[in-house]
Length: 343
Image (cartoon, rainbow, N blue to C red; front, side):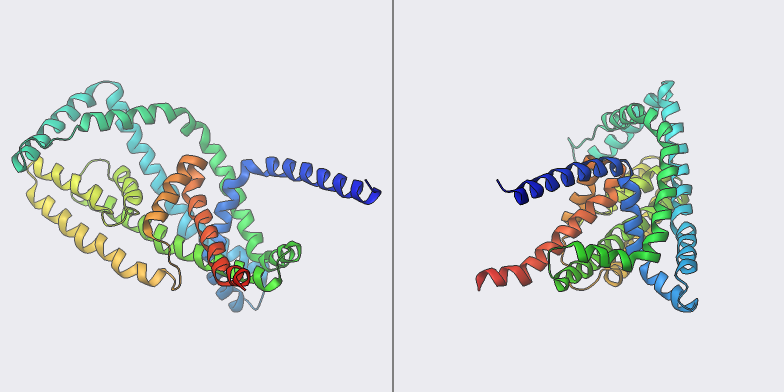
């Protein structure tokens, strides 16, 4: 073995060891990084607009964009999270002292009576569903309390990262391209395609789902259904399900209102769901979803659920980001590398 080979093997071993240590060091903050990257893609057009108005002052433009992000996204999410946590705490207290079981039992009997009037033998065990939700909340109650300070710290890091990604993003891109073994034209194509795909998935699917979920919760609040913030949060996930969407949440709400004799409120919720919530998907999605992006909504749903299961809370964003990267690479392979192999 020559001295040159020894040097190469030694360098590779040291490089992999240092790389592994750096990955381990940055891994606890992957959530902040993913959030910052997502916000960077979403708010890059806003940053460019502000940059022109401020005469090319990148630092000031980045700071203004971060502040705008806090006003538009962070504060509303914090407010919604507070409402969900308060409602979940109330539900937990009711079930902890035992008074909630009788209420759910009565509700279960009322709704199943209505279902059997529609179709004999049709029933649904709401008690089992509520027990599973309660058990999940009890198991995760400690982590919810202990994770608040960590979430605030991660959010602070994400906003700092957003500032520097907006301000120095072009230079960082050039550094990555210089380290990549691919030709610069391929690297640039990867960045452009990935940015387009991420922007479309985040804005065209997740943003629409969030808006529909919030409107669903607002409808539940208007028409007197308990715990609207919790149901609105569930509606965000339901909105990602193809064909069914927020109907999975609104229909139980209708059944509840009919079962307690509030037919007028049920009709109002039906119109709210069909006209207000339904129009969001028809009007906003075509405008927000970029042309040339062909990712089926089912894959987006799986990426969100799989991301949540595998990565935790950050998986809500990381799952679609990984899906976007996969489809971007597949598209480049189909257009470029596969053609070269066939030749």
